[in-house]
Image 1: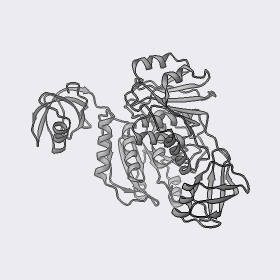
Image 2 (image 1 turned 180 degrees about the vertical axis):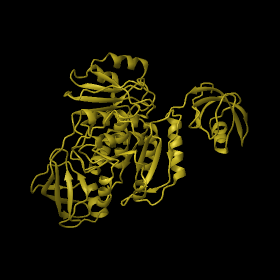
Image 3 (image 1 turned 60 degrees about the vertical axis):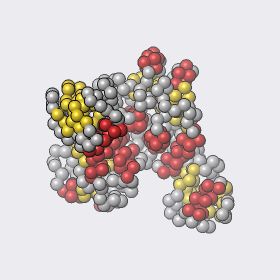
Image 4 (image 1 turned 30 degrees about the horizontal axis):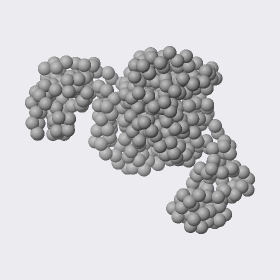
Length: 240
Length: 240
């Protein structure tokens, strides 16, 4: 395992010579599943210290310690972009979390709207999905996933300078051009499968931070819309 | 069921007064699952006659006949855009088919590359996925899904005027701008999870129809790359 193909997210500071204790799951994965032994290498990241190659110092059935050997990649933060989305079926919600992490967002906020089916989300599971996606895609940052928030409460206290890109499915043939010189922080808002209610749409249109955008003439599922909107934003205003 | 929420793809011409016989699966779905009865409505499309409201004329356990009442939507063709992708795990391959259908392509070609895991695909299942995606997203067209083709054979006989947008993962920080005046037919090429081999990459770079494009500084899964590339193409050269 000297080429260190395994990437692991840890909640521990990473620095030259730093000892990193492993929890029970990590111990099981590295030593029972992947069969690592003394001096084998693994890549670690914690979301703020970049990526480090670490080697196995101690291993047992129940615990283990890694030692950081060298930084292999600096921290790469995504743009200050939030994703607000109405949770849908579990597999598609997980998919949205995975794709948002890959495409690069700083913060993911599940929002409850009039037509959102679920009235709660398992924040811990969604956060774990973001960690897993970052482990898989070579990321050094993990977007923070919030607990479910009410859309109207969120809008009532929305900061004045963060703009919202709203994927408005009633706009089918208008091209919205984003100003590529724009430097403000943004959020992308994706509605539920049933769309927004008339009241919600009215409120959104009256919110000064909102920019509506069309995603073409075909009806997109909410998860497709999320990936498409993130792509449009990243390719014009983001770090692509 | 007079509001006709059910959409069904049929392999039969659709026109005013046209009788449309149902196969065994459709009969089971409409009459046993959805419990439609005489004179109930359903929306039909066949990929070339647009969308029609049809009503139940005859129904039994084993067969049924619908009669086309009125066209509810004209045929809407996608742009002349092909998607070439290397098949990956089944769930992610299905996902690519679904998303390509929603985002709008005319033709989907699974390609075998050096690092493609599978050496065959179930073309019939992939085609059925495209049909289902079109039923769900309100489409009136279904992209044709080909059988698996060898990338090098495909390139050897590639037509001179169809350009290829190649998502080159080695280009991480170069912005490729697509010429929005471009009117030629295009294809998008997505590699397998392991990327293209050195020989393949060399051949692709030497192919005059190829335009390489970067999808940002993070590593994207193949299915994410497919959706991102389709979005970029549609928003600059397509019908969005």
